Image (cartoon, rainbow, N blue to C red):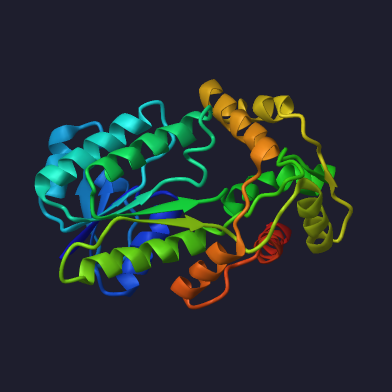
Length: 292
């Protein structure tokens, strides 16, 4: 029983590989260039590219369980659909797919709508899969050192409805638990959808207040204008991605991204511990910044 981790070098994927390794699982980590792979001891590195059908066919032929996380790219949907079709062809009947919360609601946001298409394939073919639908990652805010520490501004235009931001470690821990649950089951388990949120309702003003506390200086919320957000992203991402992120921020302001008490309780039952808070994340991140 072998688990193939697709997306093994990213923020979530690295943690999933490490978590599975700690549990003694037989893990294959899919990478484009094995010479650059940095994985825990005992992990098998497998060369593959999601747009190279033969490499994926070979990688999937040797496993029983699949973790599918593919990055936000112009061909994200094609990558995911090809991989899932090849998994069906190979008889892989234990799958965990990393989608996104509100994939069906944020219909004009490309990377949300794309993941919903993938979810529809899983549903239509009644694939034995867990679909994890995480909210916005707290970890994304580690990129905000300069505006926070030098200018005293929290610049993400998250609005006033609130986001239930989630720590990537909680997402990875849930993915590991679901992969092992499916792998260890005597028969393939039914399809399941799990919404993955954090414990707090975080508005722009509330987040600024948390940073004010942990940085011991006044931090202000930068406001709801999404155009400067798009322009700032263009400095280190392609224009199409910056616009995609702007559309997402606009939906934050229009619809919010809030988990309910039932979802939080379910997650804490699955994890057997409390969810990690944004304040904990901010304090940990601030401590790293101050040591740099």
